[in-house]
Amino acid sequence: MQAQLVARDIACRRGDRLLFRGLDLTLLAGDAVHVRGPNGCGKTSLLRILAGLLRPFAGAVERSASLGLVDDRCALPDSWTLGQALGFWSRIDRGPVPAAAAADRLGIAPLLHVPVRFLSTGQRRRAALARLLGQSAQVWLLDEPFNGLDADGETVLTGILQAHRDAGGSVVLTAHRMLPLASSAVLDLPAHAPRCD
Image 1 (cartoon, rainbow, N blue to C red):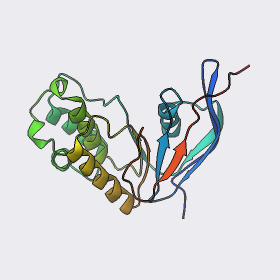
Image 2: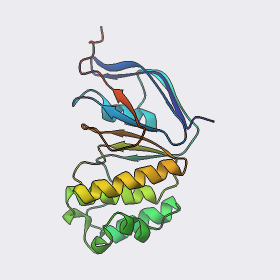
Image 3: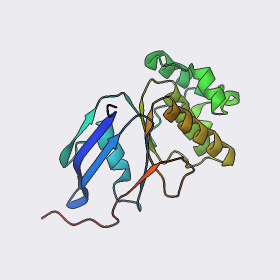
């Protein structure tokens, strides 16, 4: 089975601090990796490296599948309604799930007429995930996707993640707590890294 993403001997540097080094990761279809560690250890930086948005200090990443990233930059203009924003991305992404269907699946269909600026943290998180459903990304990179979600939202997201894996997709996500994801691997980043001399 061909790997969807491979990271070899990755290192990440921020200023004079080496956040982590020697990191290897291979994602196959159906895999899920839960990245853990304290604030500032490089979890978000790792996702950005895997996505190709940040160059690693050392090492290389090979991608043989399409990627989708959800972080705190949801790219939904505040002045647009949620429906306008999701519709815009749906026309660009041309993925398998229409915007309205994605919004319904995530329980935010009643909010499609609401300007994005009025959405709560959890509603914005669901909106970003709805946009992800509208893409054809095989590898999902999710930065704290459960933040701001209530119990119902967590249940819905867990089901969506499992369905994505069942369909041959893979997931790398960060979270501070243990997650109810079946057979997921755990990657712990170190709390303290050496200074670069």
